[in-house]
Image 1: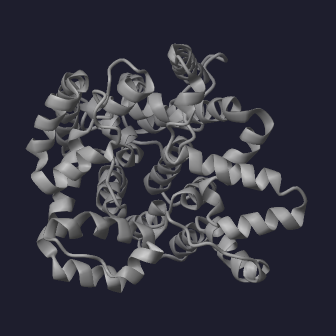
Image 2: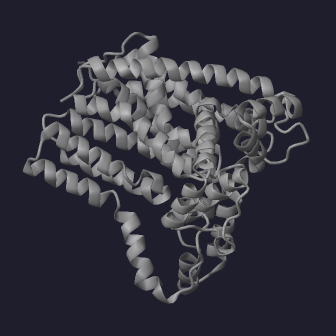
Image 3: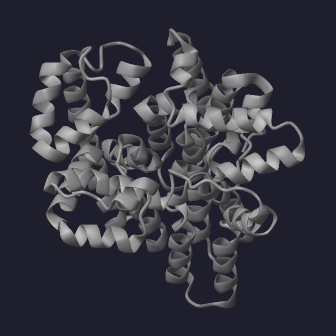
Length: 447
């Protein structure tokens, strides 16, 4: 081995490979940034961007530490906005874009390392190229969006989980790195909370009930939740004497907004007390589902179809780049399309889009066709990898069932959107690339 091909760990990845991937991806995303006619407006298109900006502005205006604590405890859910705070305080939205883009490039490097552990180098390069061109990859790094922070962390966490499961015995360094990345991801988005349990269960499947395995699994479960648990404890101790405002982005509010979607289908009104607080307990939600199971199932069906059919073309190339009029000047809110799907069916929403927003109709049809073909090809390759791959079965299960995890738990959200699919896309493109290059069996991972 020559000196200019220094190995990274034992994956076969070289420093030159990583520099190449990062440089090409950086060039792509810098070029994309120059295409933005109005970076500030694009920045504000991020998931609940205005809400997050308001929270950060309140925190900045608080002044001293007691005032900041009062704001912190009143607003709650610091993982929703505080990860953006240092960059925004230092350089405004521009520095947040730089931070998120840098994180995205880190995620690409980890995707390359993950791919070269299990597939030939050409599969890794193709997967990184496709991933860098996906709508979520173009959109999220340039906006104030939770996915911009979480997705790269999840790629890194998956890499270290796969390393743990592929080794002769689980390694502590991989467990610690997994906890570090997963802790932030869970703090920002609670949908990730069961990932450590998923990884721990695969550890037992792979290594059995050995003392080391039990210890590593315990570290995964505790360490991955350290930020969330610390905040919960702090709230009930230091924050006990401060004012608290009910969060409108937690499980209770998601259940309420889901119920608010399916009750109009049956012509049923939600209890006025629940409407006033805009939050539901699991029992209250279950009671509403029991009253109108058909209407609830209809929203799940339309979300499932949208989860697959919506490629992200509308947001990225319509609203973000302004290449066509998303709403045709008639429909101001994207929720309109969701309501049409819920109440009239998916085909009715397609017809409505063709009539009301012809500029976005064909890009979305083309995007759907490309995305559907990508999912089918990736699914076939994933099943082949699961059945015949040379990596340990637990590792194959991690990589194949990771997308299933997000597909299932995304339905807890009030509305399953295309960007909720983005935490799975790095594995979708990995299997797509393996299938296209006929490398679905993969190769032996490093031990």
